[in-house]
Image (cartoon, rainbow, N blue to C red; front, top):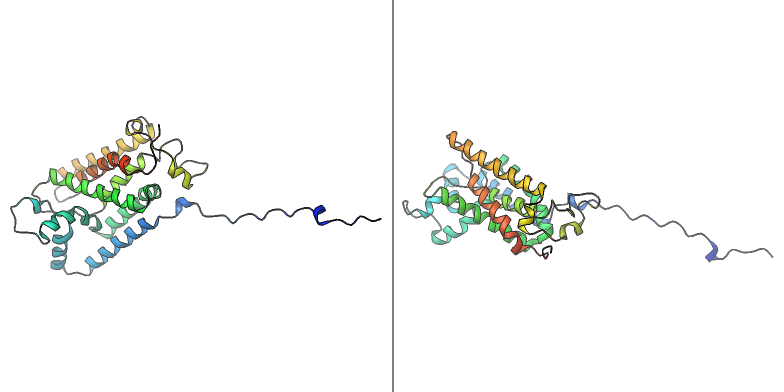
Length: 252
């Protein structure tokens, strides 16, 4: 009798390969995209204003140390303006190049922190960085009438926050598994051990060297205005505030 193959005797077809997904590291978190769009819209609005109207806009939303000196007539917004300008200045930029540069750094470092923190913690972290940067600038430039604009202090905080975990052994920037969500959820080292990590220490040292050199260059170049003190203030806030907002329990 001829054997008739049964269904169970037939070789199983090879599994269909799952469609390849793009690496998450190339996908910007939504909160980062929204912030970039808001900053671009604010700059577009300023471009549509006359010179005089733009000065009024800066008086409302830029960070101006002279607000707190008592030597000038009242700024718009009163005491509430004194508070919100510690944050609102971060949404303003001096030029499209300024905005593009800050946007690029936010994409790089903000994306890493946003994927670890989530939207609410990320926004709180950026806010603390902006406030810390404004406070540092105010301490050094009390009474100054030059307005401060730009997200640099908040981005400096993001750089410091990223330094707390992207250089570790399970870094999301290391192969294999580069960019995987699990890599962004690894416990971070305590701050003291971060300084013991050669890569992290080099990154932090370079940040301070570049900004201190910028400060020297600004001092000897009249007309050049870079709020390098705000960068350092934001960075320091990011280093120390990271542990209080990090949703992942620290490494033991």
